[in-house]
Image (cartoon, rainbow, N blue to C red; front, side, top):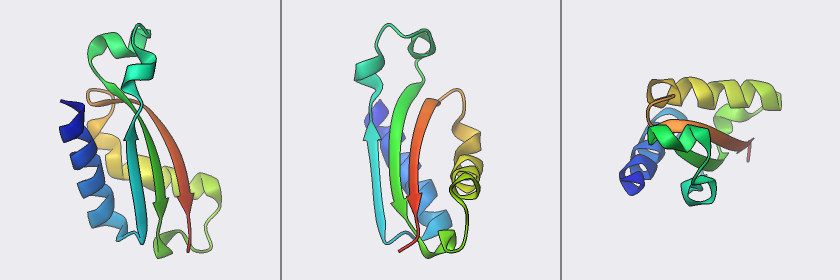
Length: 87
């Protein structure tokens, strides 16, 4: 089930940011037993490199990524770790 979530996260981020690099890692297995995992929502790590982040502070980059994925929170995504860079 989370493989489809990873694919959806990748699709949304690719469409929005046209990244030159994009990694989406499902960390859900490391959080089994965590209260947030009980709902079925996953834990994910994103590493994204996009020209859209040029000149933006890290917080602004994170806000853009969170905004892009907002429709998936909290049902599909419980926790999201973001590393967002400009090339």
